[in-house]
Image 1 (cartoon, helix red, strand yellow):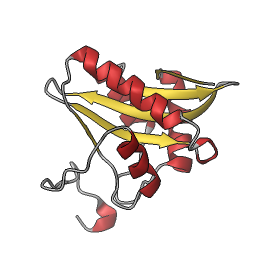
Image 2 (image 1 turned 30 degrees about the vertical axis):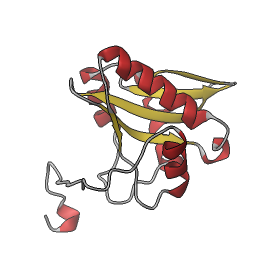
Image 3 (image 1 turned 120 degrees about the vertical axis):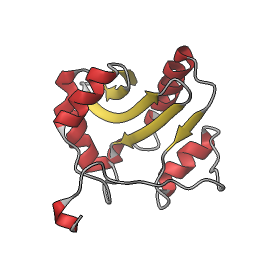
Length: 147
């Protein structure tokens, strides 16, 4: 049995530990507890966590709302709990949250090489939008990259 709920500040260390185990982090700035605290201060319900029996944190998703569209990212499921419905439960909870806020469309950020994740998104009714590309820029220069 997996329960999905809104994360609290007490969950943040466990969220970071899960992301180190389960999430693809190449090419992005390091995740920090301060960044998660800022997320919860801005939108206390954006970060959803999935727990299994025994209160083991087994998944996360961020369901962001900008007043126009729902944005889904940081969907991560512990490797030992994949293909057991955790990701689907997180997506359903995230979509319900965003619909309650007024979202009529969702977008999801999925790494190109994430085959397992891509299958989940496809099974949930999402389709890759080929005519759009994602452009990114660091908010602060990264001294380790000469920028």
